Image (tube, rainbow, N blue to C red; front, side, top):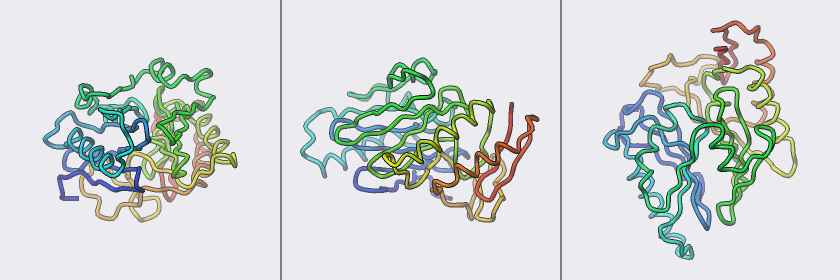
Length: 265
């Protein structure tokens, strides 16, 4: 965790996972860049506006340039980039300003109305919207409960459900319990649909250690024994069961091996 450089992982030839370095912000969020033939989608922009501590713009530009070198059949210049968000909390949107002036870039707003309008939701948050990157379709699923404008992205190509702060190996902060429960139920229905096979979930943080049920306190910079980020699809059932144990008392915690539910109310 001592390296100040972002952690860049190519999940496949068209999908990149970028982790903001812990030294730049203890939250160390994960960002995801998905490439299609017509445009790319960046999910979240991190927790700082300071390019010197987290070179978001330089990292994104470098990844796009690398992908374009390997995909010369893409003729659109500048290659379009859509910047969207798992939700509107500061540690996921702070870097927006670093990309707003990039040619060909659209930064999606962070209010529920802006998210609904951009993706074209007709019955928020109950419907699912297909967002085409060009020979690559990403399903956008309404996901409020942690935050009002939260969404979950499903990439049909990789089978990854990008869940932001809704489901992850961390503390699951529940702010609106009925909405949060409805979101988990919605994700379970989506997971169980054979036309949309979910292979794994990837959230936006790791706050759990490899020891079952043990989380790192907020503000922790060194996490030498942290749990892996990917979660199996069955985790959704365990989250739903944990929500059923909440009595609705602020600060209440339900501890599981891979996550801790925290009710904020």
